[in-house]
Image (cartoon, rainbow, N blue to C red):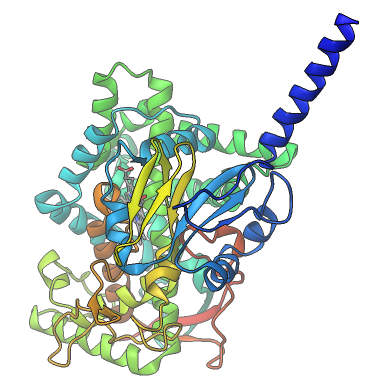
Length: 509
Ligand code: HEM
């Protein structure tokens, strides 16, 4: 009898535990944001969210307003879509809303590393990606970009001959190779015998690395959400090993001109007593953060310019004027040009086109773990109770970037949207008569803001500058539609087109 009683109690306890896990008992408490648990126990809205996060969040915004809590695969996430309250969210203390807890989990799942000493690395990273360090890196990038770009098109080629290519692969590849060589250095000339041979080897090696990276990049969205098939899991492990090896501390020892950023992160890890194999894994994170958004941005920027002739001619004129002012001109078969850091600071039209491109193409979740019960105060004064153990996420793409009150006709590309009538940079945008503090957030905000943003802007500007001074370029189909985005990558950063776009280019002079 006692045994049966215990068995019965055990069954009831497991049933209640199971129902608890499935979220049956969770109810909205007074003062909390609207709660939407979704149609399926435990999974909640996960399927609809996975299918198209942007459409899902737009639907939720229509239903609940600018703050609400949804259930996704057992997690309760409070989503914030009020542009005027985003500043309070990103500046909330780590004791309440922690990024580190979340990023540690992500880094572990994706890259197989445990992250610690986050702040220290950020300081180091910042030091070399701005100021004097940035100037040196930009100069190196400029020279590597020309090597990589001009390798593709023989300088003696008849200037009337067009070369056709896929714009997305082309742009991502150019940025990848030049940026990899600028950050992770080049083979030593001594080991190759001559400058020319060393250059050939660098271009060949970076092509091999690009091909491995592209396969990893392709599987990344499924890896991030844990949806890899067993075969894909094996493939990812193989690719990671190959990339760890290519970027390993041992391989770096054989290279010259490695950036201070990479060297200092490596040295810092060594001083922390980290095992060499773990440092190799961290190097893949550096490659990832420096590449995953920059290449796709280069694609969209060039695509929007080719799609909008008035934008293209305004940027082309600016580029030509700056080159002329510097006393240089492109001579067919002549010396390469020198685009200085200073020249890049005098390009408000290109700056605006680039900011507009990022506004339209960065779909990023700013994600935080809630680590104590807290009250979140919205800009309108309303206060919401948020529970310890839940998560909070902001989505600037809907909250700011495509809000029609902040940006008229928000889904259209307007190259001069970030210019004042006098040609200076426009930085003030309003919602309901109030200035929006963060009017554009492609880099995140607050303490976790992308430390590579200045370098990223420079490499993208260099890419467009060089493409426009060396080449005429056009879309193969002048009526080309804007490609749909790859929905599996929504929320991870810069969107990726679901198909490539054909274009052609030829020497300008
Ligand atoms: C268009 C190109 C890029 C975009 C849109 C971009 C955007 C971002 C965003 C949104 C974050 C996360 C911020 C957050 O969670 O609040 C981030 C993090 C980061 N980015 Fe970038 N990024 C770009 C290029 C680069 C480049 C070229 C580098 C390095 C050379 C870089 C280095 C980093 C690093 C190291 C982090 C992690 C910071 C940390 O956890 O302390 N990024 N980036």
